[in-house]
Amino acid sequence: HGDGSRTKVMPDGNTYRWTLRAEGGWNQPVRVPQPEPEPGAPGSDRDVNGKKWQPPPGSIQHGDGSRTKVMPDGNTYRWTLRAEGGWNQPVRVPQPEPEPGAPGSDRDVNGKKWQPPPGSIQHGDGSRT
Image (cartoon, rainbow, N blue to C red; front, side, top):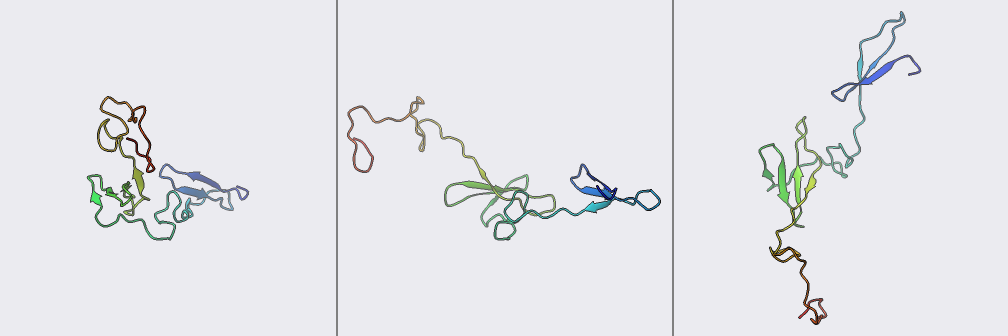
């Protein structure tokens, strides 16, 4: 730095600054405050409206302290705890592909994609007979 001070990011993630004394020695290091991330940004504990992230009522608690909930759109979201006790931004949990032949699968029990047979007639709604 132009003033002769020095900074270092420590293993705990905090940054400390050392400043020179007039006689040439060093002052005790001081922790440099970190700016809070913008609401909704990665690392923020608040949504874009500034409200703290909170798992919704009816979410299921897991052994690691996280909570999950299946939302009305069918997606499952997971909330994890921060070290200081707040909640991280929820993340969407990927759903496994259904087994071939199971409801929701696009494949038959042999793993082949469902196909209407040749010569079938397409209807106005997109179905075939």
